[in-house]
Image (cartoon, rainbow, N blue to C red):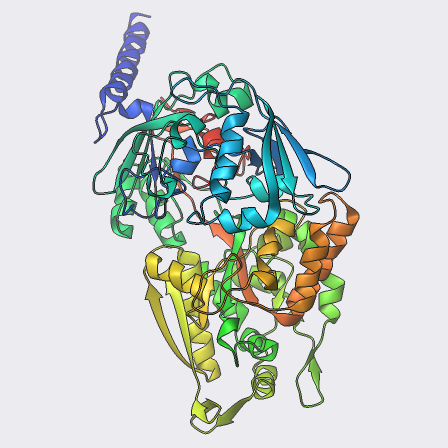
Length: 626
């Protein structure tokens, strides 16, 4: 008995010493490690100390919009439903959707103790509309006739015409939203809000800035003492504070440095990694996990599908649907999939709408019969049906995966575009190209395709371009491939200065497609070389634009809106402005050495979207491991 007691006491001592070591360990920024959640951010900021979301260059994904910003409406990523954040609920609109009354939640306070109320909301929207230097200004002015205070907690939005999607357009539906509420008592004192860095931000979110790296490599956030009066506290009604007193967002470095940081427990949550990196990390540290514990490991429900976008505004041949379809049929999708992430990922081949689990049920499966019978005119009196419904079973056989048809479709998607080089050649000829012994020509000159991708980040999109380069070169096209820095990438995307690039222009969670497709309105197209409110692709399709305008006038909850969405998809498939590869495949590792209860497939209370504005609601659920 005495020996057993001694063993128990010894074990208790070891455990207590371990807990003591956890409690005493400090981070590089001087905070207790046991109280600090460390999150990777993908890129440093060029403007350290700049926290104003309305000043050009602010790196919002550096924890700023995840922990401090306040939106009128946020999104439940599991249900695909919006809920009020600053707003108490959804808008109350009149019969023709031109007047919208929004109640403001009572009890939210700014971090300096001032109430957040209607004054802040009215000031923010008028500030945006009155400042042409704010990127959102032009669009807001096309929508609103006025934004007025009714009383301290009521705002009336008056729109210039019927506008039934106030919450969908001016609230969060995926990553975030660019209409963030600012404190009127601070920003009204600033002469030019577009030049105000806001180095000591007063915020409505649960965390404030405690410190930041002058070189732009990290930002340290601290939980507000009055966090219950933040958006998180008031919206959730929680009485127990988030366990993470501090959240450190930091840049980890190159892939080797990132791997070692995770293996050595120096970071808790990472952004996107490749399957090879994940394999190295999980083999080295059993505390590292992903969305699934086994194949496919990654979630395929990120709503931004990756693929190839065309600069249609450059003119021929990129403005030809025949050319774009030729590119699609010239590539072997099976080989592309294996080249990107070893076959992991759900095919998301329809333009513009992503094949998330919800997207498959809402749009892909209902269109299966139509797309299976859809035909392309090859220009020589023959046609081809381009859809291939056998992809899931083929990929499962390739990878040795077993499952029911439904399980395989959930994993790999409903299908892909056929690999048909013969049809691709006919479509290129129809688009005006000529094949000679030494390659393809256009307007009498050798034809060269320039493919570009974003360097260092967005591995899925970058690998997609590399795989496309291999496929198109094998097909017989002469191709160049190059990467761009983020600054060059963003500028070229807006101005249209590219030919074919790896992009992710899709994204939706909610049933109503309007917020996803309205940027493809041809009326928003800016001249080449200029940046406008619409998509840089410059897809000019009269029927697609007409559908967008029709959808704008009907309730997002109506059957008419849904039917218009289905019709829009058919038009987009016919014209192919974007060739989708897969939905967003996210290998997003977590480390449970210090923290646990991260969202995962077995506990999907949210998605693994550390870079979305909803992260503040995830942080509140993460608990200490020790």
